[in-house]
Structures are given as C-alpha cells and as structure tokens.
Length: 313
Image (cartoon, rainbow, N blue to C red; front, side, top):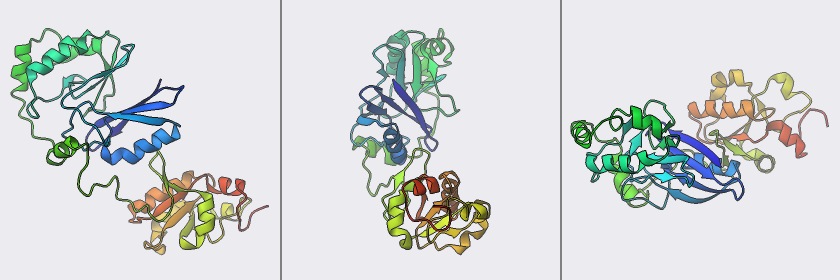
C-alpha cells in the first residue's frame, strides 16, 4: 500500500493519502482546504488517481478540502487487515477529542473507544486527525495501557467527570469551519492560496514551489523577468543561459531584489532548478506575487534544444 501522512500547522491536522500500488487508485482522509494544492501535487507526483475524499468528523478547527462530503459525527476508518486505523478526533495519541460541543457525549465516546477501537489488535497502528506535540502514530496496545483519559483501569464515570471539567476555549475557526463543513466545505470567497497564478500555466509541486515549463518560457520570455541565480562563471559557462536572462546570483538576490519590478512576473533559473526554487521563496518573502521556477533548470532547457545565449552547442 502507498501511504503518506501530511500535516497542516495552522490547525495541527493530519491528512492521510492511501493508494493501491497496482491500480494507483487513492483515497484522501481529512484534507484541509488551505492544503488542497499541496495534496493535489502529491497525488500527481505519485501518479495516482484520487477516487474519494473522506472525513472522520465535521471539523471545527479548519475547513475541509474534500468538496464534497462530511460525516454527521466521528468515524474511525480501519483497514481490512486491521493493521491501521484512522481515529479522527475520537482517540488521539495519549488523549482524545473534546466532547463539549457539536452534540458531543463523553459517555458515547468512552463506549465507542472501549467497545470498538480497543477491540482491534494491539499492534494495530492508530493515526489521529490531530496532534499538538508533533507525535505521529500510536497503537491500540499503547493507548489501551497508557492513555491517561481512556486507558488502564479508568471507568466511564471517571472519564465523563474529567471531560465535563476541561474548560477549553472553542477552536479559533469554529464559526467559519462548522457551517462551511456542513455544506461540504464551501465558504464564500474561499481561496486555496493568495498567490497570483493566472499569468502562466503553472504547476504546484509537493515541495511547495510553483513551476513553469521550458517551452512556455521560450514562447513568452519577453513577457517576464528571467532571473538567473547561478554564479557568473556558470552564466557564461558551458550550459549558457536563457536569452534575455538577467544574472543575479542567489547570494545577492535578497539585497538586489529591489532591482526587479513587482508588477511583472519573475521566472528564476539555475542549473537544475534547486537554487532557483529557493530564489522563488526569497522573492515571495520580498513581496513578489508572480514568481515561478523554471522546471529542470538549464539542464532541461538544453535537453529540449531550446535557444541558448553563450555556452557550447
């Protein structure tokens, strides 16, 4: 099985991607709206076909990226061989979800965990929807023994009393997230990111970089600012450079960013695309909205036999 666990730091939410390695068919559990581009990039890079997005519960701390689909309450998804379970907000690592809103019930949660999740094999790995300490996975055996709220010899009455006196504040996004998630995650004027991406057929990578393909840049080079972030000897070296490119070595980019116009798109270039990817991050931080990396750098540009200034033919 193909398995990936990703994280949204704003809401401390885990999203899980599972796929069949033969058919490449995939399912996404608990996607986050702001991370939709990231998740789509991962699916594409792994060559998968996303068939379903599913939710473990109606989220109160983020808007779902599923579109459509929500559940009325907490659901745990278990693999057929009972080797893995995705417990949502019901059972967390050494903790549990809160029960003080959205028709929550500490009695129902206690019975659900003890009568269902804790009946899975000890070795069954448990993956929660959230963790606030950086923990990623637990097991049924561990939680049955060590969970301070639900494990050991704790009785239902003990648990109910504990949960009734937590005194937690409501999640920050609750007023937006719950109504939106009850409408399959749709919110008014929602946007999966603030970047301006209409100026070119950009591709978003799982590493978080917007890229443009060499053939597009060759046709539209005069419409953008081409910034080569290699060193001078590389710029004039054997690979040459993209016609019209401006040399601004990466080490000087932060100081020289003011030489570039924020009104015109910027495409960054280097040998392989690694340094120029970092350049896009630096320019974004400097306030440039229209920035993309040349996919594959000069190596791919030369491989596609596109025009070169300088260099060796």
